[in-house]
Length: 534
Image 1 (cartoon, helix red, strand yellow):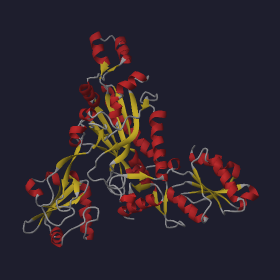
Image 2: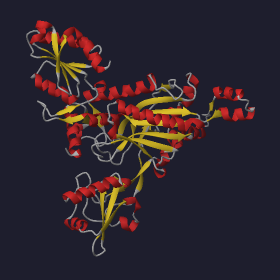
Image 3: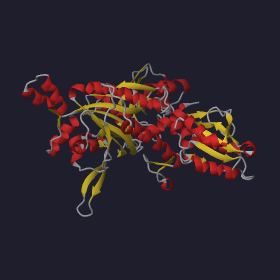
Image 4: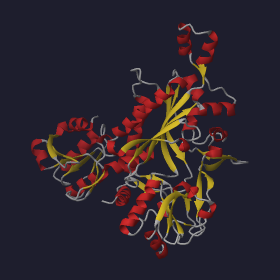
């Protein structure tokens, strides 16, 4: 099955079964915004709660064999505008963009890749496509070579003359648009046009969404582009009002907003999204140890969602792609259907050093350093001089930041779970979601809507729903009900049938194998709780 078709089918299933809808759809939608339907919000909340449990409620065991300290926070979406000056977002949080004067389309400059093709008569033609990397671009041109055309995702138009020139090229290279000279950029044929010279030079485009505060003489503010800054602003509050000591973490889940130039690939890149971020404050000398620790912890967490090892990898950032605050960063990447065989970003683990607290300390005039009393006592026992103790026991903590998108986690779980099985009756599609995260854990059906079966089924439903998210459905043929549950990822279905009245047993059907088992009616709850690991 072609990978692009997988995404089309998955997006269709998500809409049809109530996972994800286009926002404002009755008005034509709004690019980069999505609504989560009844099943989507259940799936998202299950993933959210698992992250929170693993970070805050039962945080991991640290290198010393004891649980680490992490507390929670829910900071405001709108902060004092000075926050974004101190953090660097007001001046530097931008992407270079390229506009097409003819098609009126806009592209991220680093996503415009140009094939410079030289013909027999030394004539050069520059053809741009929409690609996220050199490997992505190379894959596009390989498909052009194999099939005689570029896939729709890369471009929509290619004139006959240009096609023949590309086919007969004696030399070529793929190069980012931004690396071409101004003269060369003027010769580029844009991704959605057939004539050269329609693309503008790259220019910076700030990604923060503006708003206004106040009814009279309003001031300009921003919707937060990340949740991290609210944690840094509350560093002293957390220290002063709780019993945490460095090293410790502050975790937060919440909405963030970025005015993305080109939102794309369903919910992979959108303008409104939810983040799951944790800022880990530690002694500068221990920062690298904690960086390595959180790197592995986060990879293990993604695997706990049921994501396969083969589709996950680490990718270290090169020096020229590090953020302004970062000493080192590693991405956890996933092989999405729309990036395959390449990988795309899933989560970043960044060593932010002391940048954030130092910046806010300088801009606010408030001290954000930390007095380490435990270290002071340790140094005294070691006979260290008072001057050295004073210098070492007060410091600005370094920060290690594991930051991931909750909405992107939903996409990964859906991509990982999506299957097609032509041997199934009623539907070829199913979502093989790990039972722990399935929106509905159990479907409860009377085989027919009569002969006392609905009453038994509803009584069972009322009992099970106290512990298990389940759904009672008495209508349609049983095969159609099974098919619907397969498509929404429900791992178990319980059917009350004619035999139930005779021997007080029910049929329990498992989603992936479609195997059925008779279980005593009074044992159904215990059976399901064990199977679900609850």
